[in-house]
Length: 239
Image (tube, rainbow, N blue to C red):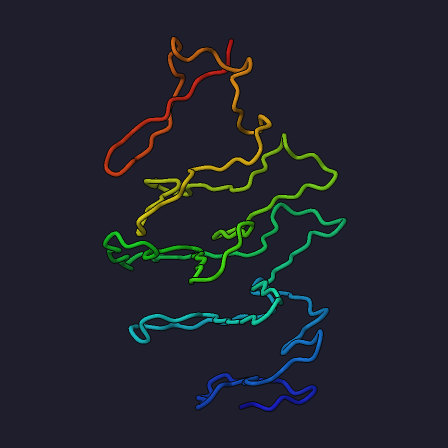
């Protein structure tokens, strides 16, 4: 294990180590301290504060490029990996990413069959929430992902803003969303809109639509249920 000293540069290049290069095992951090901390360290390259690269082949069969595990045994909440980029006052740029995941399959590589199994494939991001026999209160909430959009003062509703923004950058894909059940039951609802305020759904016709019993539809959405293709009709706004 390498012993750290103030002002001591660290280099493990071209070295074969028989143990962990840096080992903090069984260390308890004091309040508001970090195992590794860098403040006012300004990146001057695209790879940022840390940069690792490497290559694996047939063994081991599966690897993590980064592995983190944090347990809570009481009321302390584990918030996972935090990334907080800011566009400060005076900044002017077209992009700001809180995280970037790119799964890249190169020419000459082969994506083998998933045989219909879920969670097997090429995913830029994999999310899974497990409730393993735990007590789940009636007011409890769980999901694979939570996404919130917050617009303070500035009204951006008329702009190109969304909860999910996706594209097909080349070629074509089969599904925008694919849902499959490996359990006995699936989801109770396809969508759950908690508010009936007309944005984006309404439980009443109002004056927006014609009586569709005698009105031809003005488009459709194609869906696949099991092995059967079906269409959801779309109707134009009342003239």
